[in-house]
Length: 87
Image (cartoon, rainbow, N blue to C red; front, side):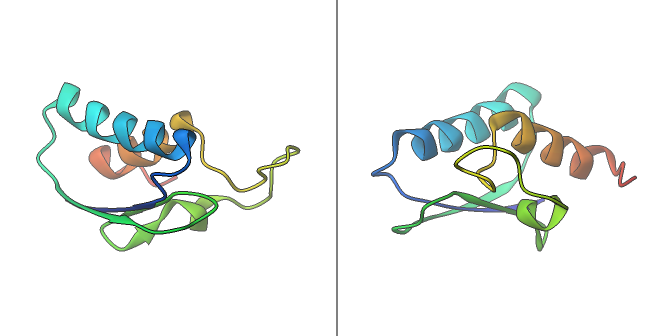
């Protein structure tokens, strides 16, 4: 599994998302090649095996960060890739 994570370390929420991603994989014993890229972005991007998390969202949330991924979004996205449950 190849995971690309693009984030800004200037935003504590994005650093928290990065830490969550690492912890999630470590706790589950997932072997993955993680490529981190620190850039001045407004929202982190998670790409697993060429598919981006943002591509999954069909409509924006009703909040200021409409397309900002929550850790639960990241977890669900990773689990789908781990288990192959694309429904």
